[in-house]
Length: 149
Length: 149
DNA sequence: GGAATTAGTTAGCAATGCTAACGAAGTATA
DNA sequence: TATACTTCGTTAGCATTGCTAACTAATTCC
Image (cartoon, rainbow over all chains, first blue to last red; front, top):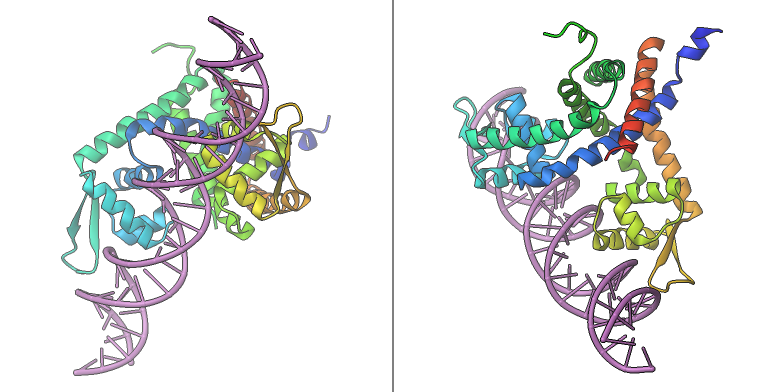
């Protein structure tokens, strides 16, 4: 059998199925987020600060693909809850430096563990080979997403 | 450590990376949705009606993991735009039957093609083997998600 | 020094999520 | 059969999250 034909999948078909799988996967795990008491935008912004380190409001907005006014309000809510704190930038007084507090770090990590554990619980039912395929796929996707033009 | 576990990836680590990849993938493709002129909830609800066929409001709300009042409003917006139509159920007058119109079908398919083409354009840069890995991963995920307890 | 640019905020609108409370219709029961 | 309970969808009212327009303050450019 001509394996080049058989093995290599069509990019559009793979895109379609990956797209669908990603949607359904996230829809599932997102249920776990209710436990955090935060809205999805607050949770996601906090996550960027925890894993990406301190940054300005504009950078955070860009990372979240949201406009600055939207992020301004999300950050204000996180500050009210003492999950994020701001300091001023000595070099440029227009800028602010946003940083997750210890409380913010703790809350995020706890929620994240819930999500991952929930998903991992399902993946544990797979064979080692299947799990390997998923692991490799995640890596390929990760690289592709980082190099997105 | 155990000897026979060499090839087997850790479920939690894979879950973590899959989770992250899914988030970033959807964040990317979602940008294409602006062209449709619909909000994300309307687009998603319409998608369920197009691919899942006609159904009642409760079923649609359940499929979207949203409460009935929320779906009631989303459907009202879709009806105003003539993308969805409702008929009454002869057997049970409490129920309504929601169905995507031809206009709704067309709009959704167009937007979907945009999303998929955008993603496929990136995947085409991969080798056949990588694409194949992604295809198998999508299938494994699809089955896992369907059997989610 | 003054104009243009940049960073962030405020105001106001639309979409999307929720719960509570309701009406209408179907089902069960006394 | 009459009454109570359940189910389906809607309405009302609130919070969150997205946007653009317009603003202030600070920095940079000429």
